[in-house]
Length: 393
Picture 1: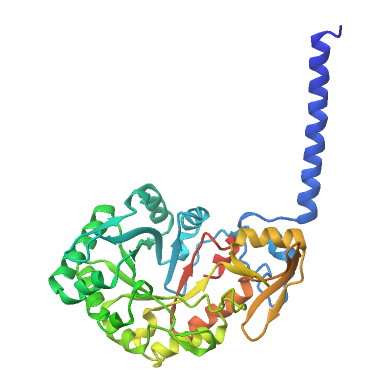
Picture 2 (picture 1 turned 135 degrees about the vertical axis):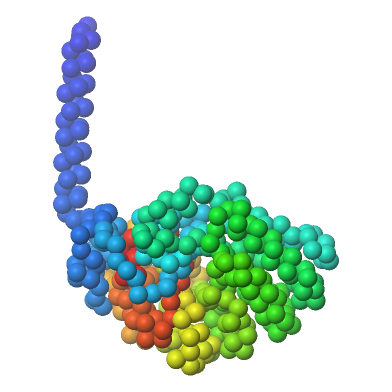
């Protein structure tokens, strides 16, 4: 029988060599891939990463790094954070100084089952994280980032909206409830999402009066009010449901408008996420006067997710998924001059797929567009993006 002490020493010896072998493999892997993570003393521009011609390896090796300094942004920027992409919470804490507003997607405004009366409730308050809110403000520098959660009008039918249209006292009562929620939770305001939830086109002409009352009450109470608006134009020049007339009616009553200039293509009509020329048209259609102060109220929407197209459909992809695809398939990244977006192709058992996903260069071109148009930015959403994107903001 072998003594237990010898067995023990043998096990320690084997473990030691396994440990050395694993560390050696890990070191070789890191050396081979040169992965750069966390805060860096230089920006992505200074590191030469913002360029039209890029390789998959550059994205894989550098996406997880970001500039450690605190820079002053030239833009009014709204950054969305969602509970289902938790990394966004970390981005908001670490890089909140780059954003004017952070909008966690927490809240829903729901109506009672009946179609009449003033019954509604604000749900999602259980998701509110006041500790995280304090951390964001603490880390955002001399000018604290403002927390303005999104509240979506969820599940309302035509009759329930019509009650608000017909009864001004009722909508002022709703405004009072929204203000109470802002005060009780320590928010700095709200982002209202309602336009894309309207169940009938007949409401398009009457909703500006409703939203004007809600927003004016919020602003009069000393809080920020932002409205989410869909694009005025879609693929194939199809007109949207929010046009110049609605913008001109609402502009005096809101601080900012979060313009959804993304999802230009669909899985039925595959293509880029948001062509640059289309984004420009969407701004100029609702405010053609470049000198108008209303231009500054428009926050040009930038998608930080991508589209993964296939012959049978497709799906949305996050930055972390794109990095995995690049590392596994090592595709050639191509640049589309017309949309000013990068894309790449890769093969699976199900066939060939094409991915359009933002890059530092495509984002920089959109920031240049925003500067030329005189707009701000809205980012949907930071949990889906890559850490080095925010150097540009």
